[in-house]
Image (cartoon, rainbow, N blue to C red):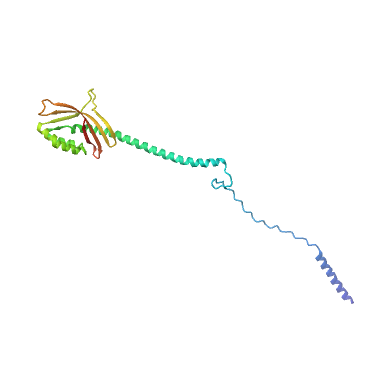
Length: 236
């Protein structure tokens, strides 16, 4: 074999050995690059336990079991007590107002009766129309109609015939007390019954000396738009 050929064959053989040696060398493992871990989601903080939304499987404390039925009983009871207190306050206020109005009615009706009684029970044959008109100013129905009819058909003819004069005054106690003998039988804010003791002095052609009569008169008075008026008169 020529010299150049041998050299080329030797070179190729060396190259093959070198290639084989490279393929048979152990491969050094490459270091693994640490992959970034995925961010863990933040755990939500647990909210305060709601006793109404608690897991039914989780037993509630005995104190909670006792409180809830008690609350269901106490709350309506408090509502009832509050309503009762408000109602009681309203009733007391109404009673106080009624009592105050009744006290005012007693005073006003008594004063009206003292003023009206002498006018209603007096007359003079010389000016009957004036006297009867003055009396009617203190009256109201139903006694107003009764008084008008009686004075026209009975009192006026008799007074004119016998020249009658009647003077009525509210009596005073014999003890010297100047307070008129008047008392309230009953009273309400709009109505009162008053008892009066009346002295009536009568003169006429039928008597030789003036006659004095002591009469008890019960008057019923009612509140009207024009003040307290007499609605009934009864001789006792």
